[in-house]
Image (cartoon, rainbow, N blue to C red; front, side):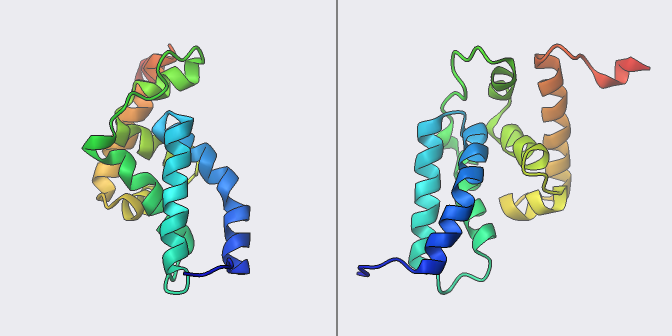
Length: 147
């Protein structure tokens, strides 16, 4: 067991943890679950730090894939007064994860597909459905009715 932390690993974590915690909070809908998921991802990375080619992709996979698992389906943003968070909470875990990665992290559909192990078509479908449900929950209605 190592007694010291690799300085490169420490600077990697320092530089990214804030952004990923914010994104994980939106994906999981609960700060405690988001913190645990991020800690788990960084712990996994620390054990494989010297063998990982792309640490960003590694952490993102470890961080966001568990949100899609059936055992991780706690309600997101329960009893939330914030309209945006309540709208996110109405999405399914897959829709919420895809929506946040597309619109908050600004990843492409292909990047999200690679990250989550989904086809481009599945990401597109989840993203489109999530966007429509999100708009409806905010009271914006269907964008196709604006003609």
